[in-house]
Image (cartoon, rainbow, N blue to C red):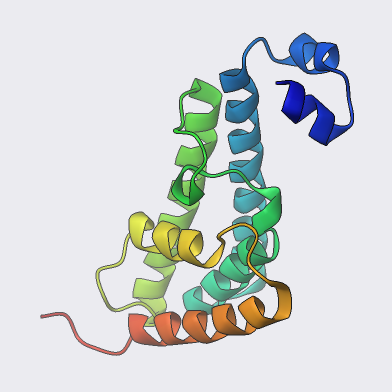
Length: 155
């Protein structure tokens, strides 16, 4: 906790006044990350009619904010708190809704579910990646992945 407090520029007592344990602090940071992602997805879904474009906007925003998030899929702690699980569930529901829209608009023809999108986001949003070079790689990978969602008919 001392390291966390020092990194935040506050005293250890300040951290302990808000979080009794390190796990509570990490859970709160994870919840904040899910809330940030949910906000990105809700905006993307509202601004883009086509599902693949909503996913592109969402995942691009996640990549842009990668150093601000603490997520289980990028090496963060497991989800333990009920509030954090609830936000994670809302995020997963919102992703499913965008994927269902894609099935309707024809942009998502393959069987794709939340884990597929979550792992793609986690792969692209690894913290600490170099700036512009990684952004260009992410854009190409995202283009390739999203183009592939609607290419082949189901087997």
